[in-house]
Image 1 (cartoon, helix red, strand yellow):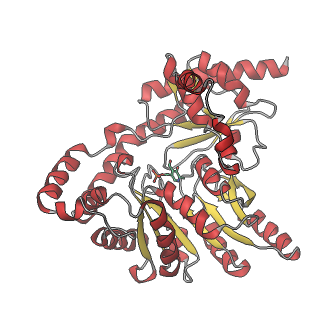
Image 2: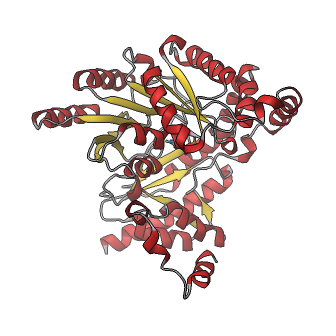
Image 3: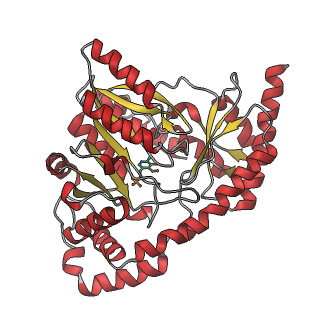
Length: 418
Ligand SMILES: Cc1ncc(COP(=O)(O)O)c(C=O)c1O
């Protein structure tokens, strides 16, 4: 539809492409979005998305707070705000982070952004010179790669295991770079219930990463949209908790613990870094949505956030369990997957030789969709992995989806043998 319209509009007229900047010429539509278009067309169970379940949105609370905000705080909510954000919300979040994560309010300043996705772009603007080395996890959050890529860094991808980033391999790499007279600008990590792999960096590795940051003089960008969604196991403090010097920029978001439609996230970092990011944000959008910020302030300050999180957890836990059980029941030998204690995703690794991108269309024909893993690697050099989401569809559908997927995988494995 869109393409037809584009062709119709562009026939015989301008050479539209020629006007784009070199950078824009290099931009490509996300493969996930392209794939999801196919899914919408048929009777396909989608384990591909990354959306929270709408049933978890606290609609009644939002109704109540919105009425209150319009009645009593319209002057603030409907006006431009400061670039750093609505101060009562920033203070409420600082308090919340101190209680929840043991990050002293005296050590961080909080700045509101239009979702943590905007924080990633602003961090790219403020920290990355072309050629600067940025370390990412392999696999990592695809849209972070895309946000940073715009600023032309050189990525180094560090493999992960069940305890998150292999910090030992990072250390080897840092040593090698030091011998070459090079250094890393920052390490980007989704430290807890990672997107896409579902794994969590262990406590020891968090401490080691901070030590390495000090020793080799780099920053850490800790992106943590999922840490509150814990279904089992014990909480681990964020890396930011161990940060005495201000090396860690922590990214939080309301997307998974409130509603993504507000487009509200925050950066908790040293005031010196916040000051510069604030200047960068001024040129982008002046300020994050003030209406949403005033609502979010009431949501946090009146204790709704703390009441709501356990409800989201109770809603998602059976879905996580259903997916793990179905994988156990249906997947053939030789297929491996992560067993997350929280978050939204499970990462599946198939035997070498199977290309999940090539397999995706077959799977959709069989009525199930996933995200091929390749795009989550900075150098797209791993072909046999996939990301499955367990938050969006109900348990029964998850089971059926995994069953269909297992059939496709068995066929591929047989074809590989034959
Ligand atoms: C790791 C990670 N970072 C950032 C985001 C962006 O979240 P938002 O912009 O909604 O805060 C997401 C969303 O899925 C994510 O998975």
